[in-house]
Length: 268
Image: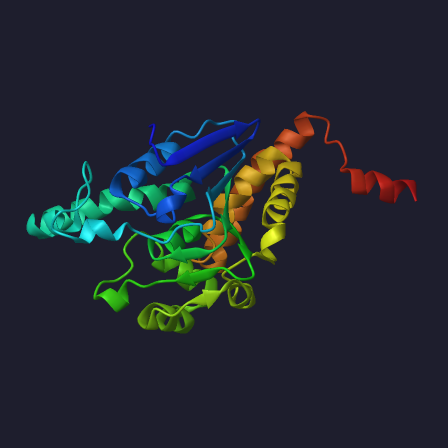
């Protein structure tokens, strides 16, 4: 689904999706969320890693605030119009919006968010929709929804709690305060934290490391770990066994070549 503010580039098994409206700090709209959902739900099977990034100085400053005005934005469903449609329509509208965020968890590719500048509200929730986050030290992350009398509703509350715990997530959302990239790294919200000048290089190193992993194992690992938090030990160990069987059989069928490290260890 083409969108004027979404740039999609493919380099072999890597797909880079860029929010491309830097003049508006990559502000988000319902049509952009629909395009993101289409990208996630129709991701080619040979794509192994997806990088989500923002053009310019910021990842995304969140939802375009013009959507909260009576006039809204041309061609976009405004919040005022949605609210006037009644409870059932509001729930359905939000469910449609959420697809642009929650669909990424169902892809077999590992999704990496490259975050600089502002990641506010919908911007932070999009970063949370990724599996991994590379963040600059001076980035400014915030959930501002509660400060405006609403709550985060684009799928970001679960990954936030999973990353930092209930109490810290409550404090971040309830106060609407800004979290720097350095603090995000310390609390587990960011996987890699780097100076601004090193952002692209750090993301590429992570991408290279992911692509170096055997494809079947990496594709099995993502759903295995994503489901771990909601599973009992008995359920999770059963899921481990179920994931491992086809991998072991596949290695045996291929002659079970040893990894390079194993060969070097044997040589010594």
